[in-house]
Length: 513
Image 1 (spheres, rainbow, N blue to C red):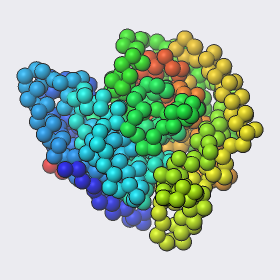
Image 2 (cartoon, one colour; image 1 turned 90 degrees about the vertical axis):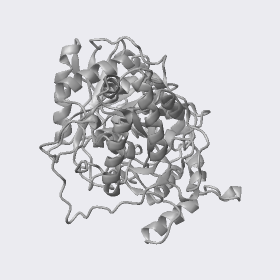
Image 3 (cartoon, rainbow, N blue to C red; image 1 turned 135 degrees about the vertical axis):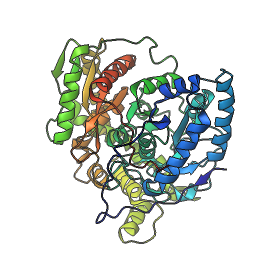
Image 4 (cartoon, helix red, strand yellow; image 1 turned 120 degrees about the vertical axis):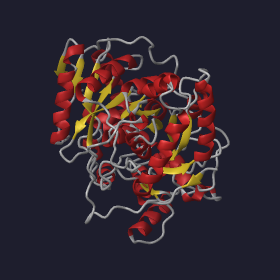
């Protein structure tokens, strides 16, 4: 039976010291990506049930402090792993992922599990069927261990909500995981899941991947089944559908490619290539300033790609500075009323999602009084209402899209890629991402140009870990290209892995066996 975990005891900033990496950590099954793990099953080195028990032990040890898994299905997973054991023993795996343990973002339906969106008013909602993307992974044999934490309704880039609480970064729990797929990034970084499934309409796969040290892939539009996600995409809104992507968080580029092909068999080219087109490097510009560690890693990544392209050049797309505002206007269409109605339901239609309810709820949270929703959500909904685009701004959005599409299709033709940061700094302390992105000073414009580029224009994008900050937190870079050229991302990403080390599993929270 699935069950919810308790909220964790949060670290005390006055006494917490980040753990050090064990010098004698011995590689084991949790260090393997899915591709290597399947090879180990094939040879009999490991059995799915053995790996599953390691994952459960790690979750049980780490989750009380990190709070990444909010509901488990351990007993059902044990039965599924045992069945996979028998199939592998006969040399008859059920699918391409038979016996691979995974986790799923809480926003996706998993049959028999809750889909709450982090809302107390949905705490008893149980899904009766798998989301389409989840079903494809389970049909391939993946074993779902449980569901991971998100911000309320995935509407913030930090992972915290009133129902399940805050998720902490495994490299330093005083720092944010990012969001909204923050719980997934933690599970994969630890090795508690071989890979995870996330969603991304504003960096929700890629920011947590950059902050927690995982590979994160956001596909282009129509590259996955849309059903079974909360909030449900409004398929009549062309702009919002183009911005959305469901994709994997993994510990290798080859795994990201494998899962992308399972989610969209016809959308990722089977043939691998050795070279990409022109690489355009987008660093700091205007009011967007890069942290020195991010700048350093970006330069190292650019140098590493010189062997697989004819040209690496500095370039800032001329429309990039205005892209975050276009993203904000699309996200605020009609005041985000559908999200508001989920957060503040009512039997009286005119009261459902009314902005005054969000405003009063936010005021109560500031006063330390009980509130319906986490202040991150209530404040975001106030902003969406206040900044709902006017007719003039909608016309500006269309003009921005037209000019941007024209530039991108010329600049990235023939396998070209943009190389950029995902976020201008490594994982900051809790609350700082929220404060920057949702500030009345509109500072999101300086924090999200690289992230929103892929969403606004519906581009596939891949985040690859390429190093660490001086504080010991991961630093990732982002590769972006045109739909139909996904092969260029995986080719360039694999090169960065070989040159700069790629994802490294976090051993800090391993139980002492």
